[in-house]
Amino acid sequence: MSRSLADALVAGAVTVVLGALAGVGVGTAALLHEAEVRALDRALLAAAHEHAHPEAPGAWEVEHSRSPASVWVSIQSDPRVPADLAREALAAERPTAGDVGDLRLLVLPAEVEAERDGHGEHVLIAAAAPRVTLARSVGPFAAIYGALAAAAALTAALLLRRTVRRALAPLDRACAEAARVTALAGGDRLTEAGPAELRALLAAVNALLDRLGAAHRAQVRFTADAAHELRTPVTAMLGEIEVALRRSRGAEEYREVLDSVREEVERLRGLVEGLLALARVDAGQVEQGLEPAGAVALAEEAAARERPGLVRAGCAFELDAQGDADLRVHPALVEAALSNLLRNAAAYAAGAPVVLRVVPEPDRVVFQVDDRGPGVPPGERDAVFDRFTRTGEGRRRNRAGLGLGLPLAREVARRHGGECWLEAAPGGGCRAVLTLRRPAAGLGAPAPPETARRVP
Image (cartoon, rainbow, N blue to C red; front, side, top):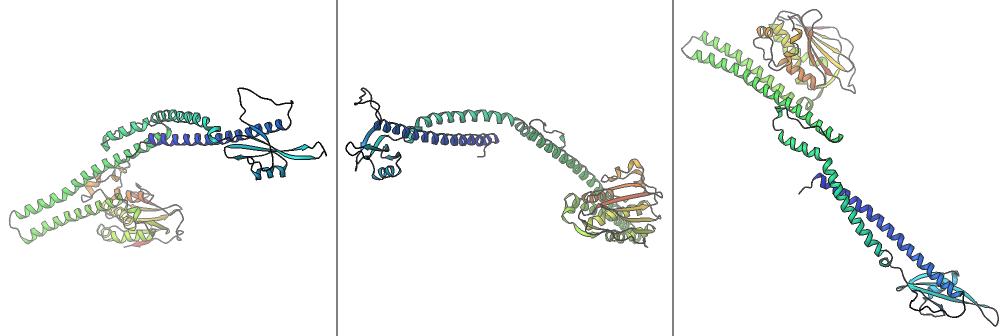
């Protein structure tokens, strides 16, 4: 079972607090124990000195109380004083202390002058008291400190839980709001309130919802338009076939029907190909199929593909390569985009010259398709890039148009870091511009300018 974020934060904070308190407690206990041991050694040393240098003659006796320290003069082979401790004290001629069983024993070397010959005699004065154990030195401290630490940790946990819950309240509210946002196109969004980090997350989520909503609306509109466009040629073909089958007809009449059906099938095929190309772009296949390609080679491939249509339309075609450049693109889709621009020029400017120009620039390559047709009014130049959109004049001039060529060209250009737009040609007519971003590292420098090549 997963814990909540608040519980995890509180548990982590309490663990840190307990660890810090434990470290402080252990260090303090060690210092206290060491201080107690040193204090006992000083007390034993004082008792030994007092025994060696009594300040008052005679024996002193205190009733109703007994000192915890015992002091005596140790003789040779005293079983109460370890031999190694006695030897160490005599050799160092300084007080030496050590633990003996449950006692703390201090041995003080002393010299006693003999009454006869005046020579001194070394003796040992021993002082003993119950040794300082951890239980005796830090036991009470540990009990009190442990109780205080537990109380502090419990109080910290309660305060932290309340604080964290309050800090995460906007997140809980956002979760509840997100559960209610079921329709992408409904316009409901999360309330951007709370800490700065949380507001940034909520803003990102709202931006994602906006993009999803826009994509959902576009998909719904695209599906409806595609269904309508697909239904039109199918309905026309069925009508032609039903009329042809109502009675027997001659071979010439059947040929006319088949020609009409073939035109609708061609339109249907173009529509399906356009839809498939847009689907490949929307699915991200542009980014997945990048390959090195030359700008002029792409233009030549598109020109070769559209050459029959240009010839049928009576268009004199010219490929003007003002230089070449290495690109990293999806070749098939770029060629399809350029082909659509050339196909539009042939459809709307029949009998007029068409020029495909390749202009390399430092950070991009510009493809320009100029024609001498009627052009597109400025107010309609953006609308024609909507899928299945054709202006009134365009629909009249090209009844077979699908309204997918320019949207596909713009999508392909944008997926390659470029753009596609329409503008007026310098000599009159329409100019379609498609740009592609060049690789940042530069796979090659633009070639020297070439002479314009005319494709018949």
